Image (cartoon, rainbow, N blue to C red):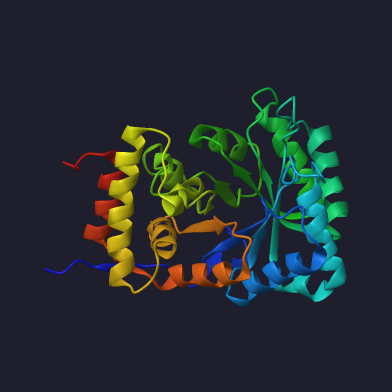
Length: 309
């Protein structure tokens, strides 16, 4: 009997909210360091092909000439130059990382961090505000108090987390009177932890949106280059499995790799970060890729290096 064909859904709600976004998101971690006009072209290209969730963070830009906050500042300049774009997007940002500390999710810090993000972004409200990484030294009750206050003040519409374990997610949720809207783990054909550690199961349990960062394996799925001989063998096998899917769909490997994450029943939205408008448009083709169960499990088995029982 032929496999059921799995394919991505056209739209997703952010958690249990009414905010609706497209099946792929555009990320701004490499956004800083360019002029406003080319930056605007990237955002417009993403929005034009349905990437309505625009994801950034206060730390994006660290290491560039502009430093901490510069990616948000550049996006804010784009919104200042073309205010109408703000109404076409669902704007997401993150806070809680301070270089050298490295993490701080205290109420005082998160409140200040969010307010600074709002100023840099030239907006009154962040649609989805996520704790970037868990702060192991702040009680979850205090984190919840900060998020609740920001939400009641209208500074954020929805709150979520990034890089939290399932138990950390649950601990925070226990102190909130509204549902966490998202969880953002690293997930790709080369990083399968969310499939097996309960993260994607948790998203299905709580109705939280799953956002995948680095869905192209940090670029390795495109360059084909690994750091070790063992890693190269694994990478070659995964690439072969993805190329087979790409050929069946008359598309490229990037689209196949993105689609691999998208067909999981958690309803994963991969976040791309390409800096080329043409490649942004090409990546949108992933939403139309069809993957059979056999092909999906083929990629999974190539990645883990063993056949499933």
